[in-house]
Image 1: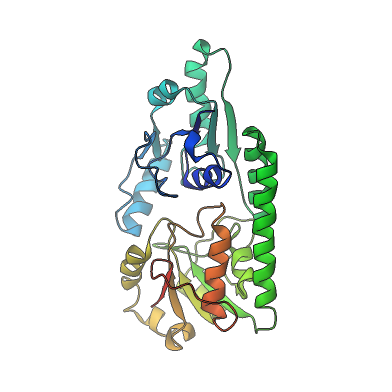
Image 2 (image 1 turned 60 degrees about the vertical axis):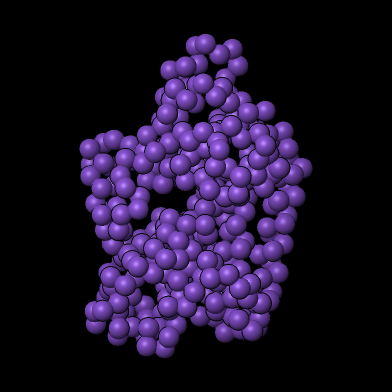
Length: 305
């Protein structure tokens, strides 16, 4: 079986289900687990993903206003690889190649193929959707038992974490998913934070991440601020945060004054709806309830600001 994955979370799911050796192509962002570097890359961004957050936002908005995709798909290479299964997404056209682009590419070269590849599109908004995606993908790979085992493992891990922090006082958390503009955390993130012992402010489960203003953050008055911009590792997140921290809007926040600001890896965790969402929740537990959740020392996972 030949598999192409067009987004990082899908690649992690394919590998977690035991099919890493079947991957024949990947997106430009697929970097986990290790051992993927030699696979052909089928996507590229039309903006510089290493720019500052404000520049990325401006470039993405410009592309959207022009009615064009944020990413390029190498349709010729996709056809050349002749995959049996293609895994893509329809949750966010700003995050990866869209389902429409993949379907258009397939339509253009399907005439020479007797058997069309299976097209699996992931569309998670909440954790239950992630579990559904695991089941759908495992079915497409004829590996339903492995899919059910992974679902059980993740659900058990979430339940154990919730039990470990259940006796502790809940803390209100503002999770900063983007810095310019300021954005809170939506989709599955409120559930992830809840399992670790926190209650999200300025974000709602099952809804896209909201744009917020400084006055919104002050009104919410969170106990803890966690900064994890989508796609940014610890170093980039810290650099982005430094553009915000000199003003009175930041310095007057109670969480800042109390020293309750943390930076997490928003590239490998949180923003990839796959098996490492469990570790994402465990990191929240380490931050909010260190006496109950043992810290796994790794400064690439999270740091105190």
